[in-house]
Image (cartoon, rainbow, N blue to C red):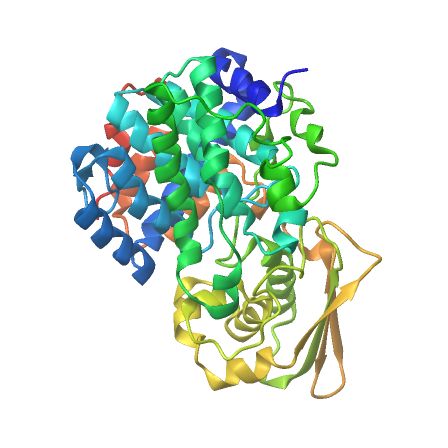
Length: 452
């Protein structure tokens, strides 16, 4: 039997646009559009500004574009700020097998490599679909990894980025396998930044993007990578997850089920594990329109070992004080509290409320509880007001159209997150170009529109 990495490389290197059903192609367009919108908003954060300065200091001239500034750098340098901007407001996509923010590593890598190698939009779609599949399947044992303290995205993003780079570098199957094997020897990342509210979590996918391009080039130049990087006695699965049990699930449905179709998107700038709670809070405040100052208590029952909504992740169960934006973005209490206070969770609301004493008092009245009898997106929220009246909600209050975006939904979200950032004409042009991505000859048709 072929090794896992050999099977993934064979699949990814041979994938052609003609192999893809139309819903898969459309989902690839959705992923690219959503990521570019989130990045446009993310470039205003300090994290992205640091990345821009470092890319200029460490980088060299090339053909890849830093999206906001228009700087032309090597692909390996341009992906640093582009990936950080894509991830640093925590509103980028994620997949629930690997628990990875796949778009933040894959899309910047794919677009930078396409510019550097002179590839077309068709090539980008093939690379994006293949890389989403490879990264999510690589992370089949992600849960035991992150319960041990590793950040899943900081581990498995290396495989997605390497797959995107190898695909756009036109590596043959042998070299593609070596690039993925090399990625497994470089990958890593821990969850401690979430506990401290520090910045480096938002650079982990960017490091993966840079490493993925490095792995591609090394394999192109003759590096031979590990053929048993997953299942080996000292491979990724045993090293990060502590087990090899069920690792072959990574290959189930390979070439038949495309994991990009399972991509989740974020209505709110908070962790994927908080999207359900935030959605229920949003529905309750929209429906009942009560004054947050009347709230006596909020209790939220969360699946104890949930597959979607969860609490067993660093930084999630944190009621303040909030010393940084990064603290706010991961806290479930902050997400619920800011929505109950302001009616929504936007980056403007985060910035305006991160040190607000009334919000802090509210977050400390929000109790999160483990529940054994629910899973998936299910949860229960109970709000008690000052007169003893009770408002309740659960997983049925979650608008799943905001989690699994169609193209029209993605267009609407893009308009919202880029409002006031991209001119309306530029925004419309980006949407139009991404809508015909498989038919464009040059990625410059996209990147030339993103400078603000």
